[in-house]
Length: 184
View: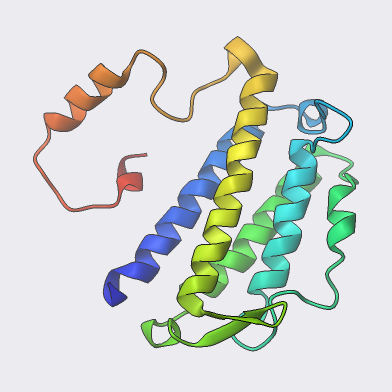
């Protein structure tokens, strides 16, 4: 596992980023700011929260607590993006911080203890914690995008009614060892 974990994690994070990228591409600035109810979050707010979390968790990952004193988490839930381009730049910067940090990790780092709010995690546990957190929120982004676009939504997975065709195309290929995102 030691030799495959970090490359797999990188591919998995890149996959979730791509789902967010493809959703954001389909939406206008107005749609990105749409809140479905008074207590719900728009995609813009979810992006702002993810970016704040990414910068806090992955800056000086091995040497500082993942909840930085400079993080203002409550402000992440106030949308102050003026343009779609601003949102995209912020999104890209957050992912850059995360992916740069992970790509610089070595297998020997995996058992090292890092802290999030003074709670110790092995590096492996901290990575898994954040991956699940980001997958949760990217799922929200995709779902909200799908609700907004309705019948104009461009599917990011196997469209309804297409499973048989998709599976047939997969089973026509030779068995091989690769990450599921290699074909995405």
